[in-house]
Image (tube, rainbow, N blue to C red; front, side, top):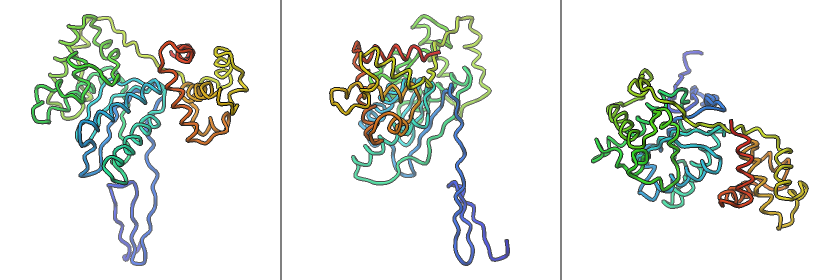
Length: 337
């Protein structure tokens, strides 16, 4: 390269600066692709940028949990464990076939907008992309839950009382705190333990987590022998959603059940707004279509307009007993395996 060129490696950014005497050239290096699988579960970790607290008060933490609950319900994902700390978040999420990047983008982007407006600031809040690790076996699942639930041990007053930390799901598992944000699906971990008695599960799970209280990193060699040596029936109850339904068939089914015509989906008649919103939401969640695809192929609306339709469609399905909730659950049942 010659004696007059110096190479400086910047390890804290995904690219290198090549500096010469004449001028600097910045070469953008591609980011490493995130490891994904349609049936995968994930350990998610998000951290704030240096010297900035991700949460400044309890209201911030409550709002973040509200977002996690809202978007996981919207896209029919499951949360098995969580813990919110001052500058980072741990989530154990099962997207159930939904794209994990899209899910976390929705949660974190909405939170940044809220945070920047509340504290009159601009710019980034999170330290790069969220980190994700695929959870590929039952032992990893249990050890991960213990690791997440032991996070509060370093907070003053919570060592040995981690279950009392209000922004962790540990207390929900032990039955000492209500799941006010409707977040936690306990069926997977309870199913792995295979203990039907609620009291017995609580006692055994607390013993399991407490035994790993000094764990600083997740131990891949942890055999969890105290769980897998039990001769109990194992049924996690986990379901994955196949999100590749054919849009034409879905729209025809919705039209039949709601006694509408498929053509009226593209109508500008305001009386069809609920029908359009519900259809857009189903196409997004069960057909795996992006907003742009829905806009270009079905609705003559902007991307933001399509996002608003999907939001309204989701709210329609949240009304228990409504015709939209019934039809959606029928389609959802057909997509489960």
